[in-house]
Amino acid sequence: MANVVVVGSQWGDEGKGKIVDWLSERADLVVRFQGGHNAGHTLVIDGVSYKLSLLPSGVVRPGKMGVIGNGVVIDPHALVAEIGRLAEQGVTISPDNLRIADNATLILSLHRDLDGLREDAAKSGTKIGTTRRGIGPAYEDKVGRRAVRVMDLANLESLPAKIERLLAHHNALLRGFGEPEVSVETILEELTSVADKILPFRESVWKLLDEAKRSGKRILFEGAQGTLLDIDHGTYPFVTSSNVVAGQAAAGSGVGPGSLNFILGITKAYTTRVGEGPFPTEQQNEVGQLLGERGHEFGTVTGRKRRCGWFDAALVRQAVKVNGITGIALTKLDVLDGMEELKICTGYKIDGREIDYLPASQGEQARVEPIYETLEGWNEPTVGARSWADLPAQAVKYVRHIEELIGAPVTMLSTSPEREDTILVDDPFHD
Image (cartoon, rainbow, N blue to C red; front, side, top):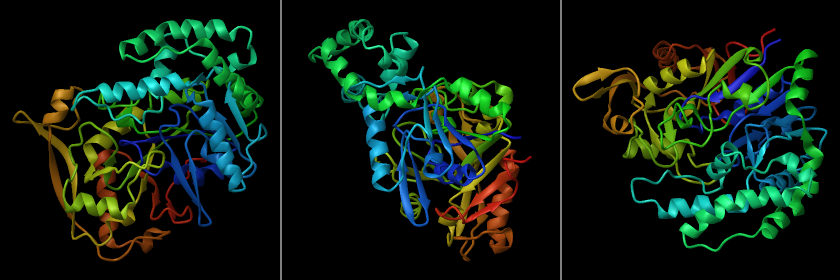
């Protein structure tokens, strides 16, 4: 029985929400394994849009168990608010369909404050472009071994001492920004006010997943962001604060690497990114504007406009190797309908030489120039196509060339936001 990991193969926003929802119908558990409420998925089901940030995509499907793993950092108030928004849409979230790792780190209000202060203080050209939601500072506390975790909400007697240790670090930072210190009582009240709403979901997730695996249940592991935002393998320092790659599915949920059977890389038919940082194929012209308008390229969580450009096969090829991607789900092919010609980046030029990968150095990343191939576009629509026979010949040629360039086959092909508009080539949950 295969377990599937879904990862973004670009800078995130590749359309993971729809693909995870499509796959969740065959899964028994859907596990979120990293990130926080700084990323999101939009699911469109029977014409109704559901916007998720922290909750695993499977929670909108009856009979599915959603799991938030230990690799996620959780803003408890944001989580409660998200559960409330779904309730208004008729989706009930309870311990029967959601479990949260007891060793997951909590995001506090001071994390958000510090995140914003750092962004405001950053000089032009050095801003990371964070969502100011406290993700980075919370991960810092986790690595610094001073974090407050979900399990700590169950022991309020020992919580003040933990908060005091944490504030010894953070208040010094706040003083450096000329901001007032935060008291133990303030953080304690912040946490106690939400403890009884979070604790019913508490679980030893590693044990839950082991039991599910032993009983033959299918597990879908869901990541946020994309490979090029990985803290180690992305365009550092313009990255997120966690590991995004497929290997994190094991560490961020408590299963062994051998449990990750199929790695599905979600890949947009062009390229986008949000925030600052290098983007070799970015089109700051009418092409980029057209892609953004047709693709409705605005962030699910922040509403920020995404930067748009041509498909970068060199980047995706790199992501295929780093993640061990088995196959890709190619999304938003329909956005390219009617374009007279299309370009694909196959590599880069830098300092008079050609390379087939994006270098790790920030300086070199800023200097690379894309090498393009030009392909003929197509006039017939691909939107809503549900079989290869429905696709124009040139669209098929475009897809096949992408497969050749990135070294991975197309497993699924998405031709609209609707989940039914999907061409299945190979079932990731193969028996």
